[in-house]
Image (cartoon, rainbow, N blue to C red; front, side):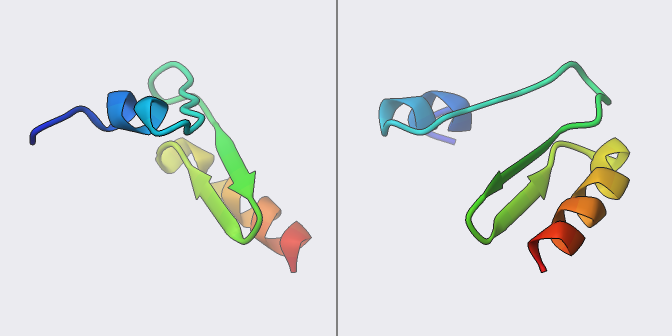
Length: 52
């Protein structure tokens, strides 16, 4: 890969947020809802339900 995703996102003005490994973490932006890892599944589901 010609670049690290985190570096490229920051370079393009993006916001990159990360929590410790296996921490529950959800990010939402408009219609995009994503979780950091499998530990975030329940929180992602709650965020999707809230968005609906």
